[in-house]
Image 1 (cartoon, rainbow, N blue to C red):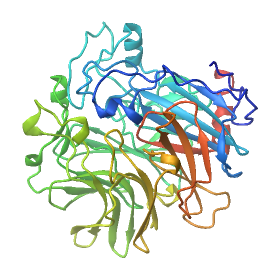
Image 2 (image 1 turned 90 degrees about the horizontal axis):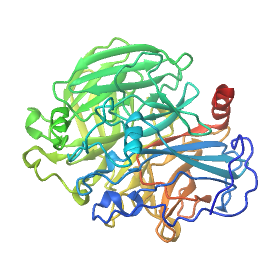
Image 3 (image 1 turned 90 degrees about the vertical axis):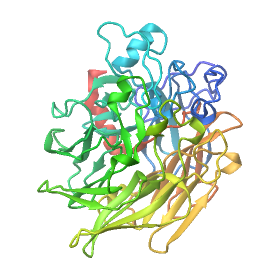
Amino acid sequence: MPVSPMPANPMNVVPRGTGERPAPAGAGADWHTGNRFLNGPFAPWTEENEAYDLEVDGEIPADLAGALFRVSSNPRFQPRNTDRYHWWEGDGMVCGVYLREGRAAYRTRWVETDSMKVEVEAGEAIYSGFVNGGTPGRLPEGAPRAKNVANINAGLFDDHLLVYFDGGLPHALDPETLRTLGTYDFQGGVDVLCTGHYKTDPDTGDMLFFAAVGPTITWYRADVKTAEIKDSHSFDIGVPVLMHDFAVSGTYAIFFVTPAQFRLDLVAQNRPGVVWDENSLEHGVQIVLMNRHTHEITWHELGGHWANTHFYNAYEQDGDLIVDGHRIGRLGSPVDRLSTPVGSHEWFPPALPYRWRVDLATGRATEEMISGVFGEFPKINDAYTGRPHRYGYFVTTRSLADDTMSDGLARHDYLLDRTTVVEGPDGLTSPSEPVFVARENARGEDDGYLLSLWWNRATDLSELLVHDAADLRRTPLARVKLPSRVPFGFHGSWADHDVLDRAIAAKGDDR
């Protein structure tokens, strides 16, 4: 059923619609494969959608005004090798859920990268997979040599909605229409790529991020007012670690050197490029600290063979550097079995919350497990980045069905050493990474809301759930019924209405 167009500015007004919702039939691709990453909540959604005045069970809090932006991993064309296709390789499709005055509007659009345009012109997938390898198609003359899938993270900076991918430059989108404007290079300060993860300095508002190219890590700080790179520093870690996330404290940028590697040489041979190689680290896992002010580098041995996945936060306290994150036993195909890479149903062993400490006087590093609840996608109240935090939020991965990645939402209280877990109402499952949004005039660290997208098996559509972050319960404050399924993706962020409206106004007549 056709959907009425959204208003010129859905952030200021969310008008009454017809009450009709687009029929999902035919919007989900079915490529007849047992690959977990192409079924269930991962299955592609082939249409761009928009709708407004969405159905809501419960009540959207009146002070929750702005937009949740998420990017999904959503292959636009059937992968050339569906058996070897990996979740990390799907095309980026951005979802915006706009909330204002207790009402909700919605829009999704593809991130129109140059490599996607090549495949659209061809009408089929051209590029090979980079995780498990595959068979590439014939690249037309002038086509990008590698694919920028633009599918990792999305957030507002410099009045643009930036969409990130670890293997290339971010793409800038109009935050209202979600139209792709082109690649974004921070006023010419970044020339190759930058990580899908970034942090915001709570004191200055500057963006903190890095790039990983082989064994070389480059640190960046971008000015929040000018978008120019104000600080950068490169250093060598010796091995091409799959460096996806990092942490920052008031003094340090923190990187983990693990057996998980990204091998460009193997990708060029159409072999699996995400490799687990324990023999590459003579002393096991190491923590590398870079002083953000002096660029001094120090190394700290933890030992063992494992990988970090994502971090909550890091901070300095009583002479220690404390780092919180999740730890996994293996990430990638073992280097001795690249001809038969790890399959989709065994790719991610369960990860657990851990705390790492570095004694800043002696340099000694230690670790301890914080919770026995398996999970992923850890988040905090971002206002506490680099500062002591009490609460961490994540999705659980405890007892999964064959087609899901996550099965609950969790809150860990570091002071009380207590983890609270809730599952979705009415069978909702596969929650996305939770995003914390502070209440207006918040009085405490957990005084706010958790926003996450869940999969409804009965309708095969997605719902936005709004939970009280301080009082996590199975029944949320609000369930916003989306008109499509947002394929299970990675990361996203919230933009408050004032930041969002300013970014929209800055675009003016450029649309």
